[in-house]
Length: 259
Image (cartoon, rainbow, N blue to C red; front, side, top):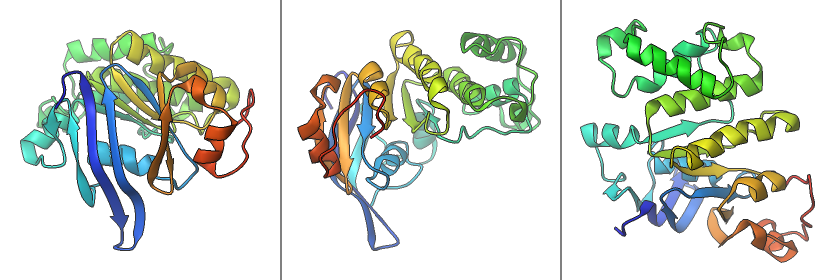
């Protein structure tokens, strides 16, 4: 494993129900501190790729290394330890709506918390203070006791980002993190994810559709089509020809367009 690689993927494939192939022969390297964006149509395999990386689903074939350790071969304590290095941000926020913002953030500590106290949502004072500070960092200071279901969609996603921060990961996997938000809120959320990358030095792998967001936040882009890796390059390399390669149409890049 080369030094400086956050992720290395060799020959990754995934077949669902023995017949639906979602990924085929994916070879990919992601360097530490990169902000990698994954492009592709719905059904191209973006979500499957991210979920294979942290073993939310098991690949059918291939191997994945996370910071030099093979996660596809990991079991038990080793798998739990590797997963603690990976935080996931979901399109639908994946927070407990009846719990307060701060309790949702504190769930980011469960990987290292004692089992019995965590079952009763009892957390050390030091962790509670860190959770409040994380909420303040994402602009939710003063809302720590608000129930999650009283917050807007953008605020709920910022709770999820604060939870990721409290987990103390080395890698962020963000699966369409702004797809459920109004366009006016998308940059607000993406700036907080960018801060995890630039200020905390975390590696980010993020699936996106919005052209402006890709150009603004990505340091590198890869594209999937029908489960195959069909293109990779820098954001400024995206043009009409590459769009055709990725999407199979004469797509024209345009400001404020969604691809």
